[in-house]
Length: 301
Image (cartoon, rainbow, N blue to C red; front, top):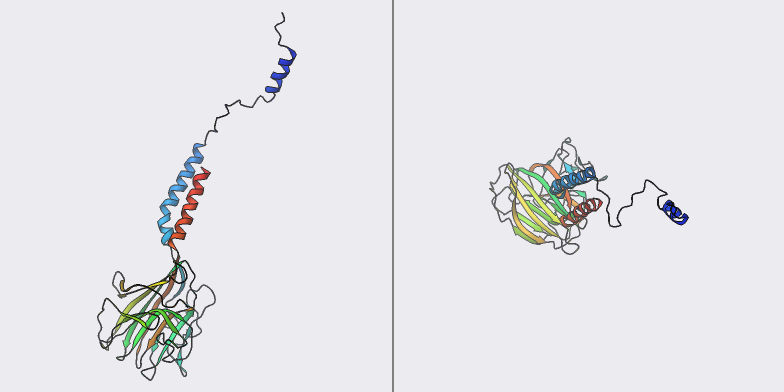
């Protein structure tokens, strides 16, 4: 018999072997993973995980001002840092400005005189805002105070109704704090205009002498509308850390469209410095986003 295969066998084998470069792998075989690709992905994952805590705590500066201007009116000047075209709206009594571009301020001629310097600002949901400033008295009467906080409204007129503390004024405090440089009245942290709490930590108060305090108000909108909170802090300049002077509380009113500082009293003078407003996204939202990126990198492995 002939040792040659039949014609059908030859044709069948030719079709099967028509691509000599094709490997006949088992159906359950998996491609060999590139060690280099795996190493790069592992390094990326490790680096991202290491940077995650810093990413979660990173803050964006919305406003900052060190008041390095001259002795002119603060009104109409731009802060050092701003998200848009915002400028200071600050009060004057007649033709005399209460706040100057170099951070100095002076009280009016009557004990009920007060005023504000504010920047337009509307909080967003899902954020944590930190407002800071250094406030210093050099002279002040028994009823004088300096305040810092979030507010509703802006005005260029010195008036008792435009200093955060009046519920019917043009500039109404929403979450704010004030201090005095006298022993006649206490410092207070304010939630609106009527929800007042005396500072739980009393700082040295000496009437008539220079008093410098760093104030901080933290506004947390991460829980959504109707659940905003504020926490109030203070420290004497030079102290290493802030002290909470009022426990976290729900805001009485969330209608906020400005941020800045206020003064009240006659015959007073002093300075404002190191003003800033920073923001970080809601921690849970940032964490979810970060974990999503980690998951994507893992899937690409």
